[in-house]
Length: 389
Image (cartoon, rainbow, N blue to C red; front, side):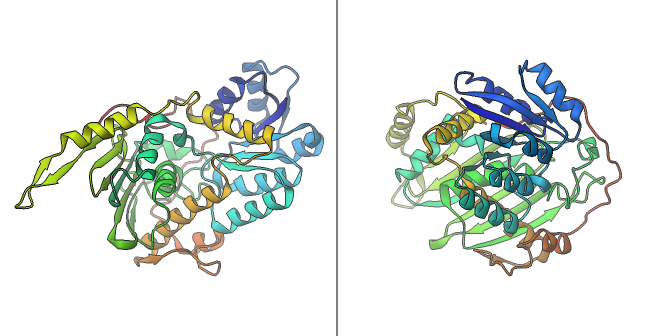
């Protein structure tokens, strides 16, 4: 029986509770920690966690229960991910940390060093990899069915009202670590890195178009240059009504996307296209033949992490993957802040490698004017990628 603790009992924690409670024969939530201890106690009561204990900090929890905890889910604001993860790993606990992995590459490297030293597992939440439409596109690309990818389009479209940034830690570079690029598009950037890897060069523009109570960007547009001339574009936004989200890959032979859509062209003698319906059917049939996932989203990733803990194996999404996503986001911040093209990989002496460097070199679009302890209402967690746009 894997003994689980959850640190941070805010909105996103409900998906972790849901995941762990799906497997009562394999794991048990034994501790909750939150800076609002009453919220931790409410979590115990609401989920009927018999015997679980509530704490006001992860340090108190580790001091009293480290030997009774096998796995810690970290669901706190980004600025404290690294320290909590490092403390838990050093205390002998495996760690599943919410996105984004950390606020800087320096912190990511410290987390990876702690993982190596401890011999435990560090996994970073990227739950959309555990969705059938995303798996389908990945398998099509890995099989090179559409040939070399020539262009990728990533639309990380979200919408957040003005009051979204009234929460105490949001809208601040020193607490949130960035805006929509880090905390919303992180999902789609992770998927792009998983499918295509890091590019050679990045250019970007950052802006805040609609949230004058926030220091950070609410939209960014980046262009990525890959070897052999391939390009990718990433739009990260919290100003798009409808929240349509998609990843499109234009290959030599066809276009595929999540949500699933396929289009293939062949050339007439004059170079103009005609539709290749036979190849479109071949791709549709390939995707239709793929097995479906038993568990999806957070529950799918949690099941994978539980298996890794049980077997002493590696999780599907590890800290190295999480770091690659942060490197891409850091490059976007650097390119947009300095108005220059940024080459990858970033070196450890780069001005944007540390939190201090990011705070020094990024723009403050507006002054944060409100700092509320909590906000009410439901949250949205993104597309299921099943419906065609």
